[in-house]
Length: 289
Image (cartoon, rainbow, N blue to C red; front, side, top):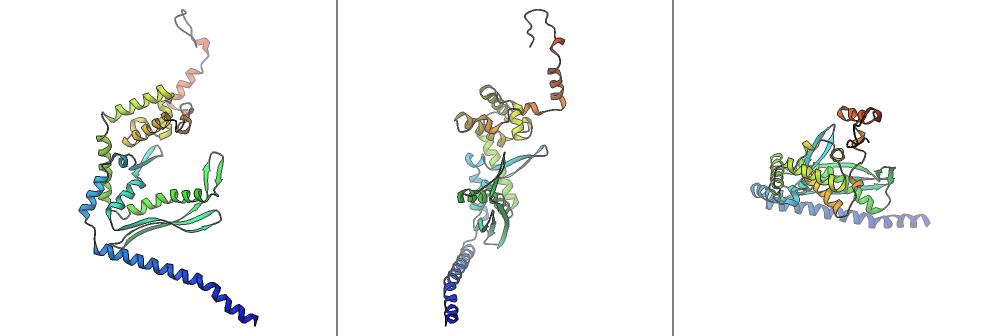
């Protein structure tokens, strides 16, 4: 009797989960069919989509964050940022994109970034693993707060999502958007870029004692190679320090200029370390340090 009762109760306990899973799968399938139907019924007008993208790139707020760049091997790596990629996807039309967390287990999450053109049925997706930890100066810090884990997955997924979107949007549209953002930045600034960068460097030195070497160490390349986006980032850092939102130490290494050990810097250090007895003063007008 007990065996019959167990056999009878076992399917009934599992039945609600199976019904819910089937209902969820059916709902998702109907949503996908609806999206495909709408995309086929109202196909995109590529000319209007391109114009919407270029119009969005004329906004200074977008142009300032449209590109990412970081130093690598003494050069700069530049490309469209996730913010520009999102604007491209939103204005291109009939394109579904996002990040999904597929599974969360001890110490890591499995997630997927995807972009799907519902008109052409072209799909890009990337599955990746996110460790629940962040790097700090003291080593890895494990994350236990669900909000911190969510933000870590979102941040790591942003790079994959950008790659998926750029794999769908035509390359010539992306290039036109980048060019339009560059024109927007140039149109909202007066004077040559070189002069504006020089003024910014001088302001950092006078007000916060941040030298050019410290700024170049933060960016990873010489100030002569700064672009419009570097200038915008430099101004944003200056404003952040001025408003008290951050400190100089949060952005710059005060010992950056002292860490150079080659070239003219090394020769200069040798001269500074020379014995003071070698310097002779003829009168009191020439100070000897």
